[in-house]
Image (cartoon, rainbow, N blue to C red; front, side, top):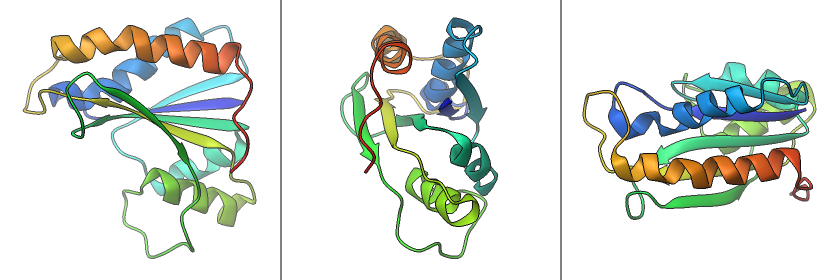
Length: 152
């Protein structure tokens, strides 16, 4: 099973980009039992369990780094030893928790979309909305036609 986790806050404009990607992907992948799509306001330790059951994980989130509308991808690897936890965890720590608690940490990647507006309000900025086809196209190719990236 391939797992996509869209992260963000839809009440802070472009911070909701990860949630929006996941929402649109859910509709496109509705008949695909091999793909699970989740949304979260933030990554929490509770997500380690579904991560541990996946063969491959993609986390999609907004970023403040780069030019608005930039889409970046990077491989994720488990972080070092599990440390004291807060309710929010970084994607790498989520992989570490999955490995330590459930015995499996799948290959994973992070996709970020650089936002333009993060103030209170709903809806994506035009530049982030314009990046949606690129992100969704990449995810559809990756999840439905592409081979899994090598384990790291």
